[in-house]
Image 1 (cartoon, helix red, strand yellow):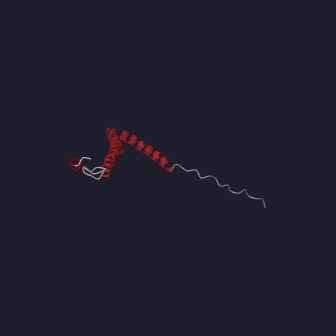
Image 2: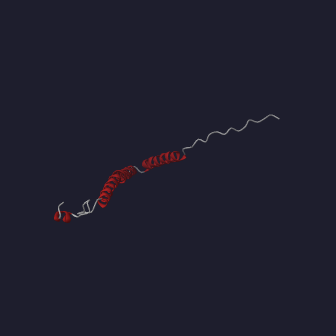
Image 3: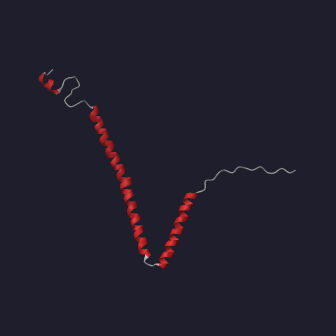
Amino acid sequence: MPRLPSKQKRPDVPVPTVPLGLMLMLVFAFAFFGLMTVIFPGIGFIGLAVLLGGLFFWLQYIVWGRWLYGVVVRMEQKEQESAFTESVAPAAGARGDGNSDEQAAANPQ
């Protein structure tokens, strides 16, 4: 009996299913929009308004969600660091030799 070739295990190649699905969804959406534009010519302006609205919200996300959030986080870190150094520093009026400022003024050494 002839010997059959052994099955060689091929390396698993990741299939880009999510990007492929998103691309197909965009293609079908544009095709549907194109057909709707042929049937209802005024829908192009509605599509443009939706596109501009989406662009507006995307820019808001970039400005407030990405850029200014980082600015606020850095400001809060600086505020916390300054509050920490103030709490670690000696209290107001205290001197390193154990005498307060009033005691030092009354008893100069």
